[in-house]
Image (cartoon, rainbow, N blue to C red; front, side, top):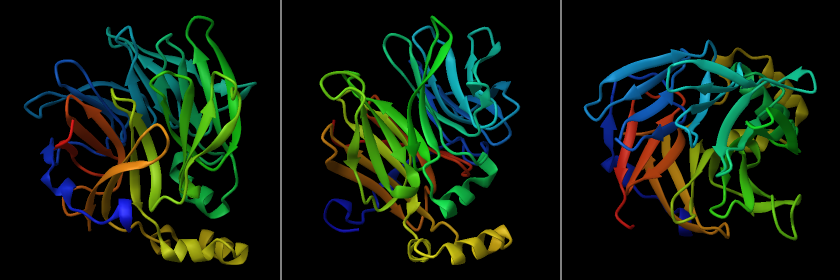
Length: 316
């Protein structure tokens, strides 16, 4: 928490939207009218208007996580249990992809959509969403990156062997894609075009917290949401499989708890930190899982919180 990560309290200036009305909008998108969309822990896809009023558009029957509008106005949803879904403007929910080579996805996590309509998404783990802490303890590379082509309706595996493959974001030129590897505190880059096509490399590592979702702004910069800061107890436990096995058998209320903290990091296309927004102690916002920049505002979602944050960015 030094230099580029020095502690600040900028997130405490956030406007709180629909406070007490929502239940864990993990990922967000915003339409041209300023309406906010997200999926809650009950499986509902909700829309929040400018006055903070909620409308339930659909229910996936699972746990919607990443979501984003495609070029045709459909809301594409990564549902942890149901796979890759599409919510049409008519309210119809369609399954786009739920398996690869006959094996169902275990933890569909986040999406980003290319200009040509191809949908990039992650399958984070072999553990289901409700068991994600077991992936942290085991710390093995079960995560995968896929692309779904709506024209051919085919799903292709692009990359595997990632440590909890979480958020995904295409570069402005769509020549590479970033994937958050949550439990290794890093962001990886996978080249889609050019001389390095097919190569995975480190984009930024040794982050001060657990990276969740990642988004790109209009300038080509990236916002990484950090769920919480790193846990010394967990870091020290990793060298001991014995201790981790014992921990896995404990009741979950005895597991290491995330420190209340609001945190998002802005990166340039070279993986350098431009700025951070923080709320030490999580007084206003905590457990942030998505940070989306739209029209000079940063919209902040959370897997567990009862609110959406909206922070006016001072530098354009």
